[in-house]
Length: 352
Image (cartoon, rainbow, N blue to C red):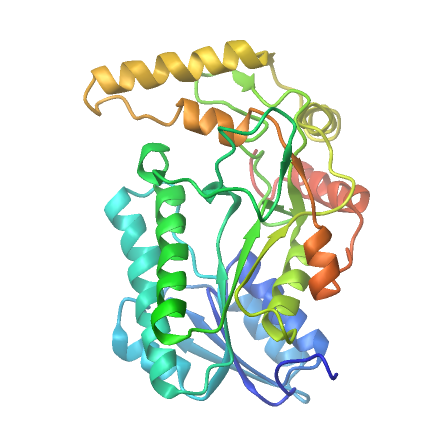
């Protein structure tokens, strides 16, 4: 392919390769014909799915597994040797503390970037970011949230360690680009869903209080089915001429929060839920934020006005840049993706 950045025999590294997204990306790379894929995983990771892929493509490709810790500079140096493209998909849990999240997202990324730059063979670093870094506090309701949307300037105030860590991770990537010319692409997927990760997204609502509070209402959900997301990630790594770009990843024909919840109750299980109109949900977030502040941190601030703007205010989404610059097309329709998702939930793979 003339528009391909690397050859099919160039070395590729995928971090977080045994994870929900990582295994799909490895599979997509092999389906595209890339023959040297190095999978970096933690020592405790389950390698069953990677081993299955290795057996399936064993005669056509080399699937190498390296176990290690991205906090180890030595492990990063070993993992990045001779690597042309890095897909950095390793993520930490959103429930961690701020210091833990920073360590897992930012320090590990710094180690990986410095190691790869030291080998002087890197052609592109694909960094997995998140919609969580955006802010639309100054945008009217239902306005477009795309790659031009501003980034949250005070992510530490969002009440979510994951958001804070991802914002700082993106800043680090940009810093290494400015100082050392790091060739990067940043990806920001919406809600990645599919068999293996089937819990109801918090953009629909929360069940913290013993009753599911439906906060999303008529808001559009920025969903992307796992296979569609993996295809976009691969294209972002191998397409020529997109260095320094940011791409949001969402599917076509996105459902509303209300439609999603209705389908879930119909096809998976019934449960009681209470819809909170936007003014009421905003008031709830304001009151919770106030109480958390007065408690001096004893009451976790997982509900606040910044979270309301990010998750429940309501936006529209676009994948136009993804299609136009990367040539991405949706592999699986949203209709079929939801059918597979609901079936996996119904079969009890993961509780909602």
